[in-house]
Length: 77
Image (cartoon, rainbow, N blue to C red; front, side, top):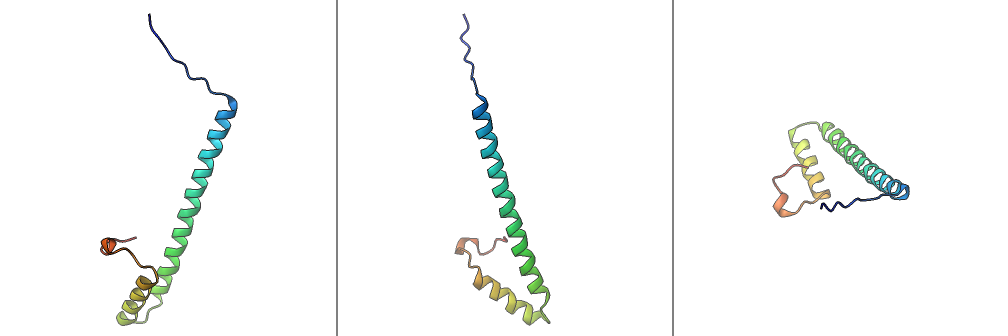
């Protein structure tokens, strides 16, 4: 004698699950777009530097504006 459990879903559960998944994907997509845009602005700012010293100054300025925890000091974003 085998006992089998069946899981019954209703159309309502499927719709809610689909909406939740879509909202999560949309949130992820918007966050990635925002991060790419911010990164592009930072790269354009650095590209405007006139020499090595100006580039280093701008890099320090960005680092001060976006502080990282000490344990992340060697990691890139």
